[in-house]
Image 1 (cartoon, rainbow, N blue to C red):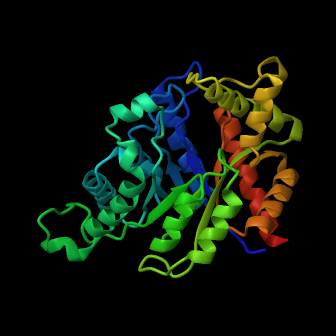
Image 2: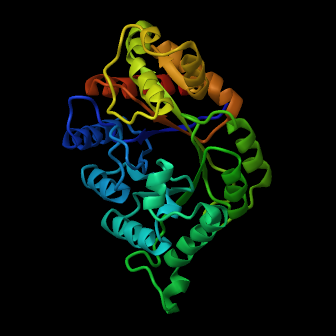
Length: 334
């Protein structure tokens, strides 16, 4: 079993009774905390029209987090590329990389990050997404290249900068694309576990080396909720379960505090659906987390594990990332 890096996915979660300003301050606090714990990167994800998630202006928030930290890599996990023009994203990330050299990642996905009506308001054309997304990645690479300096349309800032591009996926489609383009591949195991194993197999078997990458690089995202005791961790996890019940019910309200008994909230069918979607949720005390990390890595052999932690109490959220760091370190020393 090889060692792996650990990183953070933050959705800038809005909690009941808290303001969006509070949310952003909590995100910065988490970034500082995990930077001190030597997590590798801190990614923010683009979502729209959700009272529970405040990371819609993802590039702006990345700048805020990067400005408030010193060394941790900060990026998008991801920018939903068909929601934007390639040139605008090249300029935005060119600006970020110019402000924070060597610290900016550009993770891109093809999903809308929202509902159908909002996707329409964003100007997406669902009929051309599957051809538009690969074309836009190639456009980004062109805008970032030195060779584009003689073109009529240029990304300034952006041109000539080394901004790593990651392809995100929640099915096997993007695994083929990441392999073909020779780019690192990040999979959303925290909400779409069904095709993760097959996606990794496709990516590894069909990977073509590129200027950015000479061999496959896999990043898997999971949900992580750790606490001093297993009982406390499972109680804290009810915030995550409630959030997914809200998705099932098309209710975008802010994240709720934990409850004592989820059976008072979900039906048996909803419970089954949510637990299936949250299959890769590592919940427990340090010894349990260590065992779950070990089992996951023995099965998937990833290069990096990104942890998304929906915990209502901010201090408990910080402590959860402490425990994951300790569990990973203990596993590597074993």
